[in-house]
Length: 402
Image 1 (cartoon, one colour):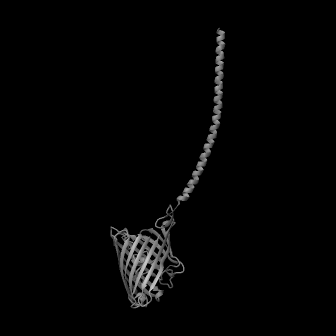
Image 2 (tube, rainbow, N blue to C red; image 1 turned 30 degrees about the horizontal axis):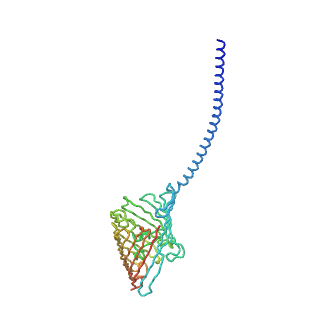
């Protein structure tokens, strides 16, 4: 009995040991299989990580290239780098005009014209403080057959109180002279600017503002012969302008489109000495001007006096301008009036005939100065320097500025 029990017990233990060995073998085989699969999975994960890193690197590189430049539209097309070191803005100005001149003693004029078709490029390069501007009239405007360079300058705006501009630009003389063409309250500037004012010239201008913009100054040295003209002698034109912003900061815009609640009042004076102007027989000239500009709550006013003294001939010409404007009902419809007179004694030429202009203008601003329509009526005394020729002129002008 005992012998049978022993053998049965031994047989049972042997069978259990076989089962345990079989289980262990299975576990070893499964472990080896999983180990191989895990190695494959690790390799695949590593490859995916490498691919992902490569993709991220390419995307980052593309993002860096894209983030360096911004292109858009903000009252004009622009391209600029995100670090601010380079920028380019492009503006277009188109003025389409109809004019009717009821002329005295000569034939009437009935015509369409394009007074201005301009392209403007401006911005900064290398440094945000280094500004530039290039502007020219397109062929066909103002009777020109070819493009006509107006502005080309570089302005290093080092500090607010000290900046240097060099190239061709507006002479910093009187307020009307410095108003942007696209921001005029009338279709064009007055007879004061045409006969006693300045346009653009070639030279250098040191300028800036002091005491929190309360005082602005310009000191310049220029050829004195006008736009796109080299100096034909050794004598240059030197001058300066000072503006005191008594209330606010006026700038060189007359119309009060924003209907400012705070008044803006500025007084400016300027003086120029031309050592010898080639266009009038190298005569020495002294020019002095003073102006007062004000705007508030949609009302605007400009008063200006101008004097040209020919030192060589000892003759003096005078000019005076008064101009007001105010908005009717809204900030879209503006009415304006102008009076100007010139007393000529031959300081700037042989003509000694006085000139006078009175006019009214009605302006509708569809989108500020970017899209506006102007209707103007003017009466001109001794027009075209013809004694007794008193003309009536009507001009209708549509402006696009973008």
